[in-house]
Image (cartoon, rainbow, N blue to C red; front, side, top):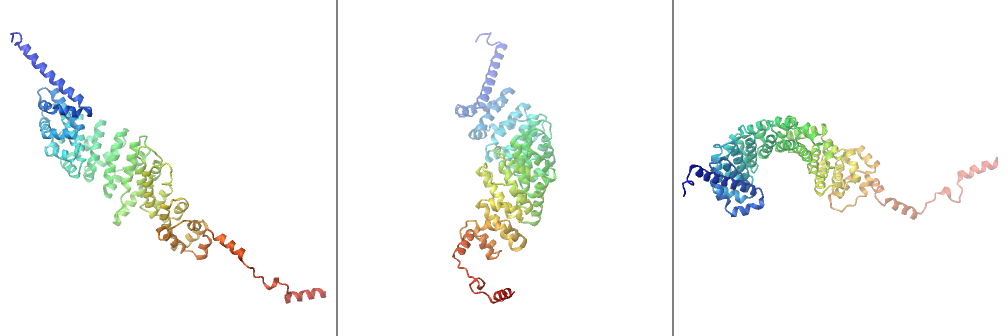
Length: 492
């Protein structure tokens, strides 16, 4: 080696070239890993073995890009995520999490999220490695993107099961997530709301106890559609868990903005609002106190104008809004006959544009409505328009009303309802036939026969076949009183 090659400057150039080569390598790997189609090829080429020592490289840029490349690879493939765990690469990243700058923290949290997203098993391994402690500390970081990635990772871990969600909650994350939701940065608000949704699916009581309801409701004032949707979903996850939690959501002021957002321009927001209303009113249990409270919640939705926007959502053909709206109407109608009438008047089920799923949900909602409806004016239109699968529920309610209400029986005849019942084709032994028999037994036999189809023809046939029985007055013999009258007239 020449003297010039061994000079300090040339030696330094060798190291600089090596560092540049490492940086170019990890940057290229990170770029290639963005495409899922490249993962298998990179894996077979031994990319993980080459990235492993670079996770702790002396150059900060190399370290960060190595972590990003590893995260992108395992994000696309569960097998790569398992290999990262087995080779200790996640452990190395966790050990270095607080040693380096915020850029490394962002990338490390991204790697944790990418591994945990796949399933409960991998997320559980992440927790057992002690990741929660590191993630919670990152939620208190000054850097916004570090907080975002920490909140994102918590949601991906807690969403898999109740046990994992419990571990996330027990780590003291909820108060920090609520604080993050109140931060001014929009992306941090959105991600924090998403994490609250994931945790509320399994631990709704804890979310309420963290004081999140009032902040979530206030968050609906923000104009960002994604934030609105996530916030409504979080409130719905809480309200749908138990009746007491639904009360807490309503008491927190969620009902008026939920109704307002059923008319939002964005379909995902409208759907989330409909789901929230459904989750508020859906509770129906056998304990009397809870029945009363549930009915009050449903009545509150109707009193605040909730049924009309829900019915209007049924006319939509996109966005997945119709099914939750229909279910909400069904739950509302299941609470009392007045609420059932409000739903029945919306003419569910008969729209020819409804999909099969919507028609099935509408049918379910109608059946729930009818089983609670004893209001004759609401039942009467359905008697003439309802299909056979719904008609038996209508007749079942009439079978409850008519035996004990004389005025209802009179109106049943004068409005043509009794005639309509006689026109229904039935099969002996079916519930429909049984309900018709009960209804017919509420009226005199001759009235029922009169309105039976074909009865008028049978009467005409009897007229034609009838042999007149002429009274004596119209025979040739003159009655005696007529004879006396004729005699007096002739005498005069």
